[in-house]
Length: 500
Image (cartoon, rainbow, N blue to C red; front, side):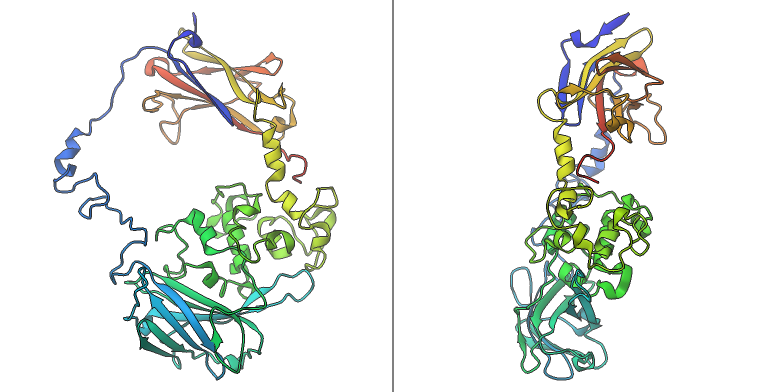
C-alpha cells in the first residue's frame, strides 16, 4: 500500500533558494553505527605518544601555527617588510636604498646578497587610441649576486644595492614612469616584496614613494588574497614562493612575454574550464564566483580598477572569449575583424543599456542580467518546490511531486526555453539523516553518493500531472535506511535578455 510520508510527526520541510529539501522518516530499521574510534585514544589521547586534539600545541600531530603575523621560519622572522626609500639613476647604474623590518617593525640586519633581486619596468602608453598602457620590463629579477652589482648592508636594517643594469643603455629618459621592485627571499626567510613608482629624475635621486604621472594599478594584492588567503599554502606565492605581491609580478609579467602577460594569464587561469581551447594545466579550474561579473576581482581601490570597463581591448577580452578571432572576425558577430583596439569602445562603451549593436561592458559583465533573471525565481511562491513525497513499501519506490515557479506562475518544464535550452533540473535522494552514508545507492565510480534522477526525464521516470506539476517515481534500496532527504536542484539554461 501507499504510505503518505507527510502524515508522520517527524517531517521537517526546508526551503532553499535553488531547491527544496524534504526530510521524511520511511521505515524503522536497525542502524549500523560503524567502526568505533575508542581504540584510537590509546596512542592519540591527551598525554599519549601522538596527542591529537589541540592544534595550537606544538607537540600535537595536527599542530597549526596560527599566529596572525604568519608562521615562523627558521630565521625566526614571520614577515619581511621591504620599503624602497630611493632610486638613484644619475649614473651608469641604478642605486636602490631600502629598509627591511620584521613583523614587529624591528630592523632585519642579517640579510645576505643571495637573499635579494631587483626588477625595473617602464610604463608606456599604447601605440594607438584604445590601447591600454603597459609595463615594459627593463631588467628582470637581477640577483644581488650578479656580476657588476654591489650589495651593501648599511646598518639598522638599511641596505644599498647598485645594479649591474645600466639605465643609460636602454635608455631611460627623464620623466619616464618607472617601477623599481625588490624581492627578498630565501629558504629560511619569509618572502618580502617592495616597490616604488616614480617619474624618472636623472639629475638627482628619486625619493620614494614617488608621485608618478601615469598609473596602472588594476587589482591590489589584498583583493587577490581575499580568496587566496594569507597563509603560505594558499596566498599568492609563485616561483618558489618569493613573489607574493601583484605589484612585483606585473613588473615581469607584461606584454613583452606574450601568454604569460598578467592580463591573459590571470583571466585564462580563472576561466580555465570555460575556455573553448583550454589553457595548460588549468583547464579544469572552475571559478568559484560568477565569471561574468568582472567586479568579483576588479575592486579594492586601485587607481585604475575600472579599466576592465573603460579600456576594452583584444587581449583582455580575448583572454576569456577565446572563441573569437579578432584578426578574421570569426566569432565576433557584427563586429567583424578588428586589427587593433581603436574601435572597441564604439560598440563596447563602459556603461549604458544593452542593444543588439551596443554591448556596454559593465552591463554585460557585472552580473546584472543574470541577477535580474535569478530574481524572477525568488520571493513569494517563486522557486523550486517539492509538494509531496509518497513511499510504496511494496515496491520500495518513492513518488515525488514537484514544480518550479517563476514570476508567480508554475513553469511548463516540457516547453519552457529555460529548461529545454540547456537547462538542468534533478532530484537527489540521500539517507540516513544522521550520517548520509547512502548505503545501497549503487553509485559509481564514487561510493556513498545519493540517488540522482533527471527531473526533466519526461520519456522515463517523470510524468506530467498538468498545470506545471510533475511526478518522478524513483526506486530505492528500501530497508537500508529509515530517514531520507529529497532535494530538488537545477539551473535554468539559455541567456537572459541583456546577457548576449
